Image: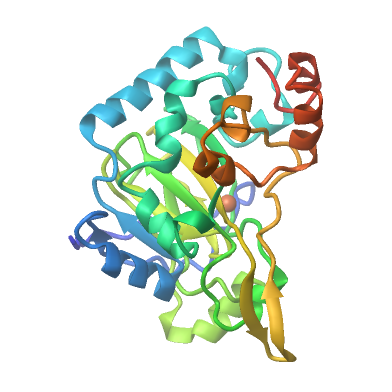
Length: 326
Ligand SMILES: [Fe+2]
């Protein structure tokens, strides 16, 4: 576990065209970073208390090099898949580069979907190895010289019962962001509001958390992993608009039926978390894998996946879908 003190980043430009990023209460102190193997108990406790955790050195140097080489190669071979070509699809507008659904055509990425460093922690936070489910996998890049961004604090997908259920954990969805480049002050930076997962709005969190409210930029070298509950308020804090940042994002969902309680009833059973999107597809080799654990991990199908599977995984059916480019 390591603690590093950092200077706050200026995030209020006064430029009305830019998003106002939060309340400007940016933390001066970096949160603890945990060793994913040695500090697993402490890492899980930090996540449960704060809605996020930083894992130091989750990817080794060879893996960082391998994934960067993958991004470089596919940007050259398939620029349109990254939004680099002329045919820019809606998901390529206004948020830098993204290679959505690379698993469809690249089985060499399969071992990363349950990475030996981060996955044991992810699984524990979702209720156990047999309860963790795959949801989405992509690579993103804010290129060098991209200029200021326009993202404000938000949460991703949420379930209404998060506001009142007991116990709160396991969370509904969890995202792992692995840094593929060094994220230092000046680079666009993932930033969270600790303890904000049980509020509807950032304003409510600001009022209720009072003096404890803070916006925490999560800097770290390439290989760092950030796990966050999708209900935790977060943003991509603007950097100086010059430095580049490349990241691998993977979302997980919670599987299985779980006894829980709401204030109005003590007989509430939480169903498996719903599909995160209506477009994300799982490749045939994973969705109908001969290995039962892999099939279970890739079992949260949406309607697009159901139709694609019914077609016998027809490439033409895939091509007709919004991010099914090949
Ligand atoms: Fe988000």
